[in-house]
Each structure stands twice: as C-alpha cells, then as structure tokens.
Amino acid sequence: MADLISIDEARRRVLDAVRPLEAEDVPLDSALGRVLAEDVASAIPVPPFDSSAMDGYAVAAGPASELEVVDESRAGHPATVAVRRGTAVRISTGAAVPAGADAVVPVERSEPLRPGEASGNGRVRVPATATGDNVRYAGEDVRAGDVVLRAGTVLGPAEVGMAASVGRPTLRCVRRPRVALLVTGDELTHPGERLRPGGIYSSNRFALGAQVVRAGGELVLAESVPDTAAGTREALGRALEAADVVIVSGGVSVGPHDHVKDALREHAVEERFWGVRLRPGKPAWFGIHPRGLVYGLPGNPVSAMVTFQLFVRPALAALQGADPAAPRGAAVLDEAVPRNPRRDEAVRVRLRFDRDGWHATPTGEQGSHMLTSMLGADALAFVASGEGEVAAGERVEIELL
Ligand code: AMP
Ligand code: MG
Image 1 (cartoon, rainbow, N blue to C red):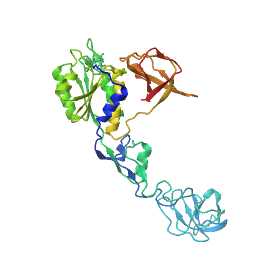
Image 2: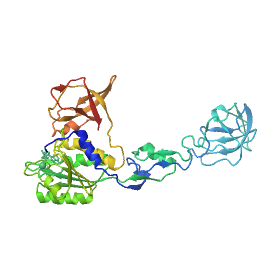
Image 3: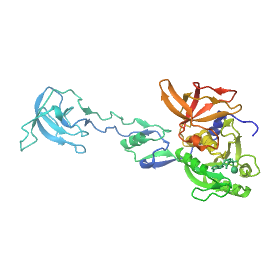
Image 4: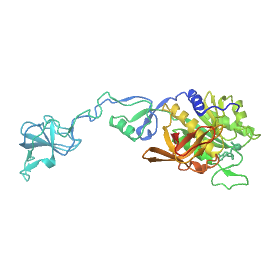
C-alpha cells in the first residue's frame, strides 16, 4: 500500500473496469428500481381517442341552444349515434367524444328540460360553446411514435405507469448484478447467537447486504469466513463462481491473520488499487477477474459502508447502465471539522435547508468503528486533507447517501 490514490482516481479505476450486463424482459410489477435497457416508443396516441374532461353533454360548438339528447357515451362504452345540429349526447369523464361533437358542456352549466319525460333522453338547454371546450384530444399526452422513456432511466412509479399507459406489459431492463458477500473474521457472530469471549456481532453482513440491495444488486451469496488461508481461499472460489461482483469485508490488511490478499492472488484476481487517501477507508482494495469485479473492503463497519458508497455503489449502477454519479452538491458546515494531514475525510452529516441553502452538521463521533455515526446521515461531506480545520460557516462538497 505504498502510494495512496485519491477518491476520484479510485472511482475512475472502478468505472474503467465495468462492462454493462445483458438485458432481460421484466414484468411491470417487478420493474421498480430497475434500469431500462431500451428506448420505449409508444405505438399509440395517449389518450387513444378524443375524450371528455367532464361529465355533461357532447355538442357541436355554437351559440346557446336547446338540444335533444339522442344517446349516451360512457367510459368504455362509446355512443352509437352521432351528434347533429339540434342534438346532444350525454357524456361521462373519459368517454369518447362522439362523431359530430367538438365540445362538451359540463352538466352543472346545462339545464334539463322536461326532466320527467318517460320516452327518449329528454332535452337540455346549453350555453354557447367553442370548439375544444372540455375535450381532451387524442395524443395530447403522447403522440404515436414518441419516445416516452430512454435507456439508462432508473424506473420509478411514474415510469412504470407511463409504460403501462402505452400498453407495454414488460420492459427490457439490464439484469441486476449478482453480488457475493464474504465477511471475514473469527470474531464474527451471527445475530441471535450467544457472544463468545472476544466475539462481536457481524454488522457488515447486514449493512453491506442492505447496501447491495438498495443499489440494485442481487445478493446471491453471503458467508462468514474464518481467518484461515484455506477457508478464505475456498470461500473466494465459491464467490467468484457465483457472482458478477465479489465483496470481501475485513482481512485485507497486512496482519498475520489477514488472508484475503493471498487468496486474491491465488485466484488470479488482478489488483487495480490498494489504498485510498480516504478516511475512513484507507485499506480499500479493488481488482478484476474474468468473471467480474472484486472488492476488499475494510472490516471496520463505517469504513466498510463508506467505501461501499464511494466505490461499489457506482459500479453496481454502471453495470446496470445507469448514471454512476451520486447526487452531489455543496453545504455550509455548521461545526468546525479538523483536517486530517494526509487523507481526505468523508464526514457523515445531517443536512438541513436554510435561507442561504443547505447546511451540514456532523452526526457525532466519527470513529471508523462507530456505526452510530451512520445513523441519520443524509450525506458524506468531503473535508480535504491538510493543516488546521475547516471552520464553521465554510462550504464543503457533499454526496447524498
Ligand atoms: P479487519 O479489517 O479484519 O482487520 O477488521 C477491522 C475491524 O473491523 C475489527 O475490529 C473487526 O472486528 C471489525 N469487523 C470486521 N468484520 C466485521 C463485521 N462483519 N461486522 C462488524 N465488525 C467487523
Ligand atoms: Mg479481521
């Protein structure tokens, strides 16, 4: 770990190694959060026909008049009789405007005449109307042939709804990256089991697992790995077999019980970086393998989560063809933060909006083992290395979590 590289350089090396995954058809009910692999053009206009915006009467536009009601057009049940001079068709919101009509009079602006009449639909008095009054024209929302969704879009509720409104039951989406997670350490204990002397609960297994899912990955394997050379080597073999992205947490330092680097070498994983000028997260390791990307993240819980956010999350986005950049901005620091002499610090902050823009307050103690510093954190604030401190009131760059 001779030369530490910058956060940006590390991210560049990660994104350079990414080759987007192939696409598959996804039913709309499963498409939320997926990344679109095609441009979606509409084969039909939306709305598909001229329809009424109100309950009322479809008429031929013209001066105030008395009209004979000759038919009804309900949503899903168009009228069979056309409108002619002197006639109107009763119409519901969303129903097709009948032939011969080009305006709709809302029911509350009409006056029924002879309402009790038994035969026929009666007569109605309507005020003057102009062409297009209360009519929604075919194609007002989408014209036939319009591209409504672009490849690379992360599908939210509106995008899924739009796909449905143009009649698509499935969408071509990039396959979700398969991720294998290996948490190393003889001290690790599964929640629910009794802590032995020297044991700790394995928070990384669940925090990193949740980050994988939130980033659109599919967690296909999650194993606790003992601090032995053979155990580490075998688990890494299974992980490389199963996944597009392998994440190993812990064991990536240079202690006598750190076996990850040897195992990576034995499986011919090619190193792309080891060591980032970052606090927390300096020992982060990244490499490539014919089957995909491999990360050695630090074991400390905060370092693991921060390095996931900075180096793994962008890769999972890029593998799916989405924009890897997290939303960024600037915020005023509300508390002074001392600078680290050698490493840029990713300070966990809460954000609040004020008249002069966003303000950031550190979440509390920032030790790399203190998971409480991640609780309620809205963003990472970047404090560049150097002497002294960033004073309260100075602006810093932030990346939203
Ligand atoms: P290591 O990188 O293996 O030297 O671990 C650094 C620190 O992180 C040690 O204090 C470990 O006990 C701790 N640690 C490693 N893995 C986990 C985990 N899965 N959950 C919580 N803490 C961990
Ligand atoms: Mg360890």
